[in-house]
Length: 194
Image (cartoon, rainbow, N blue to C red; front, side):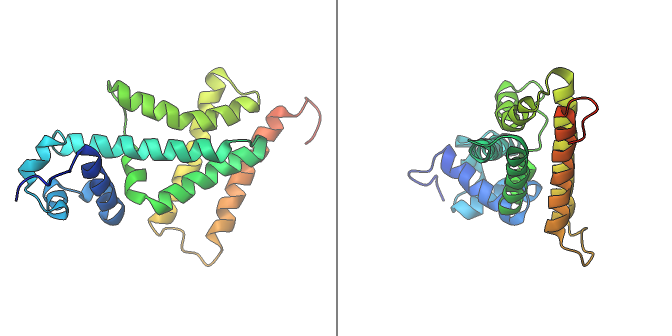
């Protein structure tokens, strides 16, 4: 088996992303990918720098797709509507692309391309927070709280740990409503209930 004619890095990453969604990001191996593509594992090195290079490329793909979805979700929205759109987009993306979502959870280290991809993915939620008048260190703190809340809920649900006989989507909607209420309180003038 030789390298397939017309096979390029994009096709290799596409196939790896599909395998990650089907089998889990950490379960994808070069042998599995090569089998999927009908080639030898060694031939993949013409397209990616081993398993670490493949995982990096899949992470960049996940970040790019999630970032695109988030930017589209917040377009022409503001306030609570925009925050709900961000939360729903994270949940929808994680459900539709569990492997790519897992891949996107990668510390950039000194990888500037990864850091830039993460910044683009963070920007839609950061823009929502700025629309509430949040900036500086407070923006980072609130971003972390909101992202950790959404991510935690989504991953616990994916793991099957929200199994009580109460509507999980309703619980998620309530979580997002609490986050929206918290931000609305920040905008209310002192002494005025919102």
